[in-house]
Image 1 (cartoon, rainbow, N blue to C red):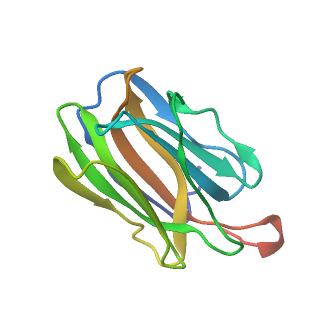
Image 2 (tube, one colour):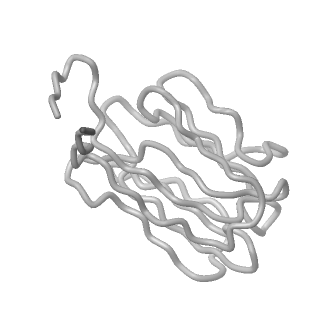
Length: 154
């Protein structure tokens, strides 16, 4: 008999039209940085997360100059919000546990606001779809981050 998963995980349902190819930024470790690319005064072209010291493969495109935020020690992402319209994510903002934020894009479209449902959770990865030109939808996966030293039992 399979054991149920512990209640350390939550998912913020994807927003946007969802056309194109699936993506996931899932990687080992804790998120330690964020990079975003914007199509000139329009939608979000690309996303890249850093886990510990390792950058993931950019989602969609990495053309142009990225806007970047490096997280401090013991800082993590607790909110992802923004706007979507006309088939793309137009604006995205990451907010950290220390009150810092990175906001990229244009304030155009329908608002979304993602956050974990469990105390102590943080952003673990993003997933949804992109079409080669930009991010067409986005969802957020949250969990309590444990290291091997935390001795957690389910």
